[in-house]
Image: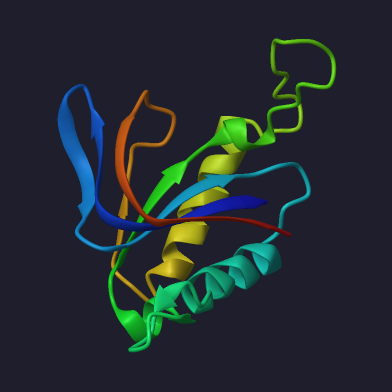
Length: 144
């Protein structure tokens, strides 16, 4: 499982020119799964995401988590996190879990996140337009 975390201001996701999810501040997550990912990994990474200290404290130091700072999560399914470009210029996605399997893990991951924060999502498997104000910029890859 891979989660690309971005500290965010205004961010939204649209499908067919209609906004389906948006946040005013918090985290944008791009989430991908591979074979062998488990419920334990999902729970671990959900806790890691909300406790990641990437928000500024009173002195401007990245010392606060989403739980301390406040904000929401915009979670986007992203199988391309498992792109492999080792053999040429056309990425292979063979390591990405198939959609019919990964949708269940994605839903479970978002349920775990909702224990800690408000969560907005895109539409699994849809072509989405994602608009992100990346604050910092701060972008961190988590993998388990």
